[in-house]
Length: 116
Image 1: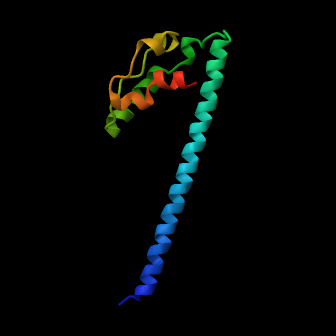
Image 2 (image 1 turned 90 degrees about the horizontal axis):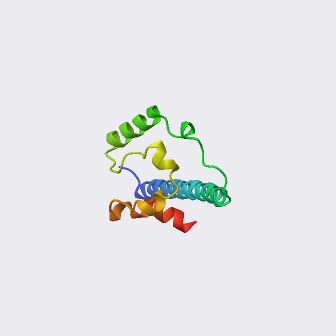
């Protein structure tokens, strides 16, 4: 039979390792979230400064859209399909399309853009 003190020590080590892994994941997520916020702020500043929007041919390709659709379906994720290039380039899109559900509110473009 295993020594209870040894089993407890192994358990504590496993919990500590899991907690550390969780802390690293949180740090990584916060870092990438902060990087996204910085990039979004720069893009909004460029748009407000009157810089031209990107050309439609630089946006998501049909293959990329199909891949995203397949990924969402395989993962069981819900949500609207990717907007068309024309919809992405519309400057009034933020004000005209409210989130589809309350669940999507936290991730809505409307909320993100107003936050900036």
